[in-house]
Amino acid sequence: TISLDKPEFLEACLAEALMTIRHISLVAEKESIIKNAITKQSTNSEDATEELKKKFSELKDKMSKDAIITFESEIKKLVYTNPMAPDYANQIEYLETILSIPWGSYSQETVSIGSIKIALDIQHYGLTQVKEAVIEHMALQNWTKQSYGEIICLIGPPGGGKSTIASSLAKITGRSYVKIALGGMSDESEFRGHRKTYVSATPGRIVNELIK
Image (cartoon, rainbow, N blue to C red; front, top):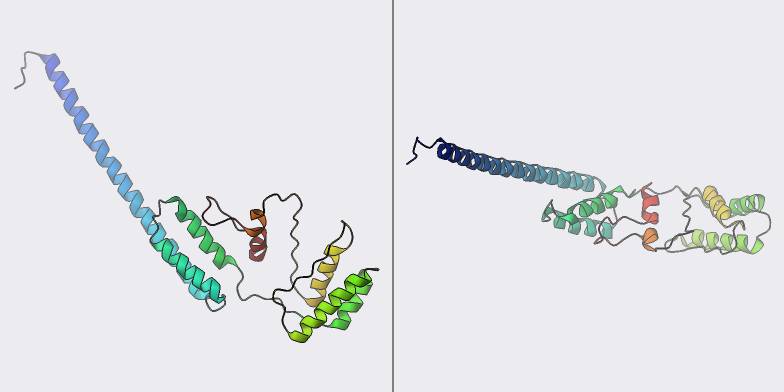
């Protein structure tokens, strides 16, 4: 029972009631905002997953067997990953990187040992042993029709012609040429890429140049 003879007591009760109503309203508003955010995040997550699956279906025939197995395994993990988790963004970026690689895109290579020898002699004076080694390598490659895993390593001081020979060879054979400077690189992860479990992990320079 509230006594009307004490207005101060009445005002205190009204103020307390208003505070309670305001608190209940604020809590309900916060719950509504959180639910809407979760619903929106879930919808965006589903849209992102479907977009990745759609793009994967378009590229699947061009991708390697290992890449297909990796993508299918990682997309399953993404479905069960909480969109609010820190790993979710990394997982999305990892899958997008896989799909960004130009699968099935190859240079139209033309190998003519005579043309290679003439071009190298015209564009580079001297370097006889280097040019002979390059021509021998290209001749063997042309004969076996295989070029996987083979690397020509040229060692020498700056200005010796290493990059220009590689550039000339790529131009003569019709291959794409990419130069990756390693000067000043202190972390090998910058070259080969970071582990996917690291926060803000990024691919290395090799993969970045492939994507470009």
